[in-house]
Structure formats: structure tokens, C-alpha cells
Image 1 (tube, rainbow, N blue to C red):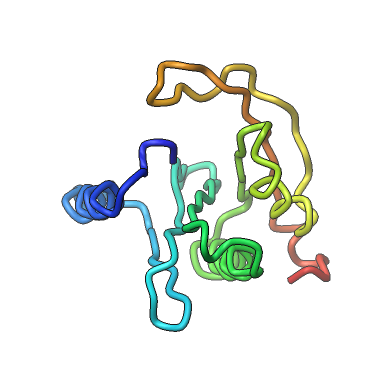
Image 2: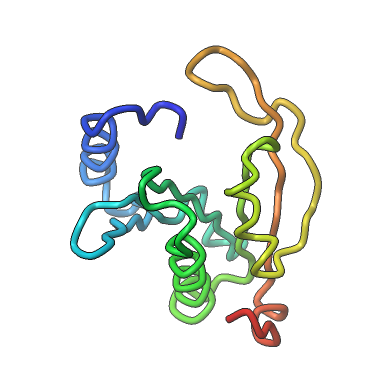
Length: 145
């Protein structure tokens, strides 16, 4: 989410989601903390045929380190497996984003490796991405949820 620098960037992103065709629309949710907009979380790159999806999240800095994203990810994982009938949920994080990768680690996702230069930033620089996944059969016996 390196392209999200101002409130207008987030507003434009939400508008882009709303403007997409319903059959192609991914599910995204606003995160509010005490009634204040704090961030976004949702599904991306959903493959209904293979029953897999990825969770992406962004949280404004004043709301970080409060457990908000961890709680939000838990809710989306449950939703993905229970309501969307997914078999696999992925989370991808920049290798240097320590706070972001703590989320899948704390929730017992499996580290699958590093996608070298897997993301092109707005600056034109490539960064490495760490991939994590959780399977439905693992979720059913995961005490983190």
C-alpha cells in the first residue's frame, strides 16, 4: 500500500472497488476504531475455482500496535473458511515489514518462502515478499482462532 499517502488515496481506492463490476469485485472492509476510520482489510486475488484467496490490510499509524489487525485478520479468516468455502488463505508481506509479518506468524500461518522482487513500488523499486498460508484443515484445529 505504498501508494496510500493521503486520505484522498484511500478514498480513490475505495471508489475503484465500488466501481468494479460486481462479479469481479473483491470484498474489502473499513476498519473503524471507536468510530474513527483506522484502515482497510479485505480479500484480493481470489481464485474461486481453486478456493483460495489472499488477505490484504492497511492500518493508519496511530492505530497500529493495538491488536486491531490481528483481530480483523482472524475475523476474515473465519469468514473465508466458513462463509466463502475457501480452502486456502494467504498473506503476503514485504520482507522488511516486521509489524505486518507478525500477524500471520502469530496466527500460525505457514511460512512458504520469499518471492524475490515480488512487488514493484510506486518509486520504481522492487522489494522481496514473504508468503504465508493457512489451510482450512489447519484452521479447524488452530487454537489461535
